[in-house]
Image (cartoon, rainbow, N blue to C red; front, top):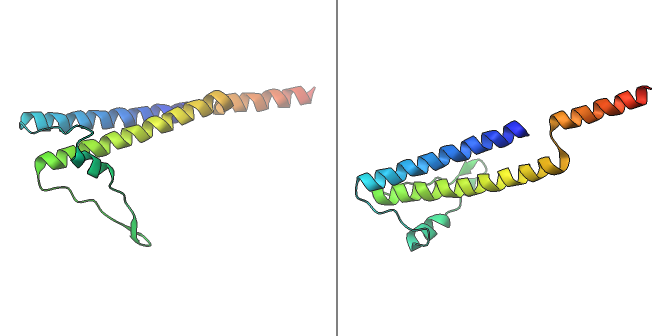
Length: 117
């Protein structure tokens, strides 16, 4: 569990670094980074993937405008970071309550040793 939590943290950090790259892209081209309350960002946040057929999800098309495309990718990255944060928090709580693999194995070993005497 500890390694899983660490890897999720690495994933989140990579997404945040990618978002910074998109912000740099916008800044270097003198394009605008949209605020999270901008109606265009709200529209992006409303995008949902659903299945067209049994095994074919809808696909997202990048906007033609570099500014809109970068802002869409920033929005998606931030949404993913939010989800990863929630998953990390959930796993940390589970670890606190239940312990990890090593602790569970040690507990079983102690039970076995206690019953062996």
